[in-house]
Image (cartoon, rainbow, N blue to C red):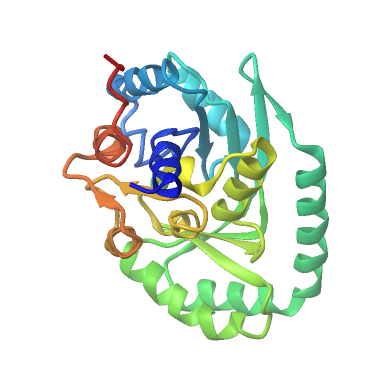
Length: 272
Ligand SMILES: [Mg+2]
């Protein structure tokens, strides 16, 4: 093995970051504790390397915080990405917003949402007159939509896609039957990259896992070289994970995420 290959092999074993989606990737829909094996693996890894854990979610920071308390998680993440775009560093279970990132993000979204005014009315009219979906308030978007089922969410998506072409920086972020709107520069992948850059962590040193459509932007090798998903992930996610050379687990939710982590980033054996 050449010196360069040895260096690469050495680096590939030095995991520095575990970035997970939350709902469906770690947390079950029912209010039950997150599988203990996830925290055991995190602790085991930390005996070998300084590994940061990032939860990258579409929830608001407060909603995630409440859920972590409710499920009595034994270890809290080091970083949280909320609403797929805000970045928080955690200290003593409290979030310290990354001011520079979050402020720029907020400003850009305010400008974008104002500039696309006529679009909201078109979408609202379509939802009210042609679907059974609900229009709801959304913390990060002027408009939130909850479709009545996955099939209807597909139809809403198909309706909005050509409309959104008129506003090239605006995207509809879909998570199952839920939609919100966002600036295309801000998504789970961009936030993961920003945190990793800030910590000097390379994609080669990052494991990432997700289960739904809003995770697709971070399930890419340019952000993380080790990509996994649990068995309950939607087909589009499984397809992308395979295409990116990742691992689709046979177990569901957190156990599936741990299975992918073990397969892609096995814990180094102690030197004899
Ligand atoms: Mg999810």
